[in-house]
Amino acid sequence: MRSRYTHLECHECHTTFDISIPQNYCPSCEQPLLARYDYTSSIDRSVLKNREHSMWRYQEFLPILDPSNIISLGEGWTPILPLKKLSRQLGIKDIAMKEEGGNPTGSFKARGIAMAVSKAHELGINEFCIPTAGNAGSALAAYVAKQDGIAHIYMPEATPRVFQKDCEIMGARVTKVQGSIKDAGIKMSKDREGYSWWDITTLKEPFRLEGKKTMGLEIAEQYNWELPDVIIYPTGGGTGLIGIWKAFQELLEIGWISHIPTKMIAVQTKACDPVVKAFHDKSPGTEVYENPKETIANGLRVPKAFGDKLIMKTLYESNGYAVSYSDETIIKRLEDFARTEGLFLSPEGGAVIEAIYDLRDKGFIKPSDRVLALNTGSAYKYIENLL
Ligand SMILES: *Cc1c(COP(=O)(O)O)cnc(C)c1O
Image 1 (cartoon, rainbow, N blue to C red):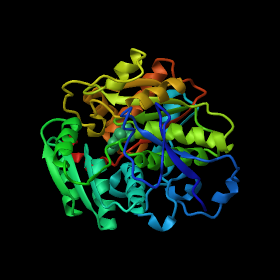
Image 2: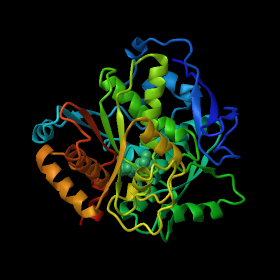
Image 3: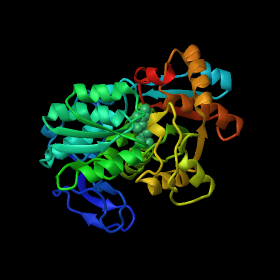
């Protein structure tokens, strides 16, 4: 088991950075840094055979150099559930769902935060700050508690109370901020002046992406190295979308897959859909979405993602698509789906199911397609929103 991690690289100017020094983002481009690996010598897929079933089984593809630095609460290796009734109903060959709601603290944010906190631990960092719509905060509070570190968490006032409470129970310092996650980020930046808090805002830190990348590695393995034709992902800051795509590129490079047929679909909420607008304008990045409305899909209320250019690049490179739906539509679909398949999804997951119907009607999803939907979080943290 040995990591192939070699350097960090700005995705825009391609400047490289030393991995032994903590880096946030490219200081000249103000763009995300990507972890790069040396895959020139081959690795046999059989190395996976006797490894533990968690996201850490892909050690070669991950930035942790010494596995003893891993801080784990049992994240990853989530199930892919066939949705047979839905497939039949829609006349589509194969629809399945990767159910991320069973991750620690109830969402796939655990993957990114576990990686970020573990890597920070390896670099000697133990005080963190983050703006969050809820789930990232819960995850940070948990992993930092396990690390014996300190977490400063900034969340919008409208975040369901359960998120504030569980962060506080796990010992984090929580500040509520009027406005959106963007305003929470601005307040956080002011408060951290003069302190050495490690900022792990989505994509302003390179390793949450590497944690989310493990979803793509798992998908490839769970599909027996024949990727699905369509992946539908609820997009806020975009790390999942970008991470899955990054995983596929790396698997192609090492030769574990032979081609990438997958179209990546970003799903947003009508309350805040900067990616959808940019996609229809064929723009390389998004505008700031002014005055985002309230929505039950908190995780998608991101007016301007720091990784917007990487989100758009993923959609264009994969011949993907972007769509958004109203809360009303999402709730209806969520209920209907729960009664069909027995899965109670987060609102973000409900939006993803709606996209399957919509994209089939638009002719984008074909009857012969293998479709993978992601449910990114547990419904049970959103009861307050649904009441
Ligand atoms: C954060 C979050 C999202 C958005 O994820 P990104 O990777 O930031 O795009 C989607 N769903 C849930 C439940 C979330 O918590």
